[in-house]
Length: 67
Image (tube, rainbow, N blue to C red; front, side):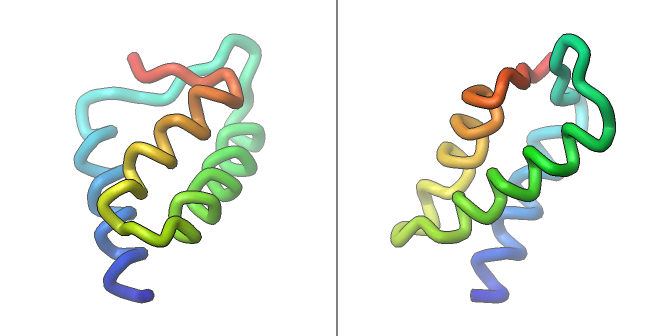
């Protein structure tokens, strides 16, 4: 489980190195709450390879876009 969390965190950090999640009217607190929920959802996936996709899909579903 720790390895999976590390892989997800690394994937998110690498993916966000040049891009940022943005949401019209979204605050830092909103981002942290949504990010935490999406990370939890992604970490519960049975296939670790799907975790980045699940995380990104969750964030987009909450109104965030990468820019």
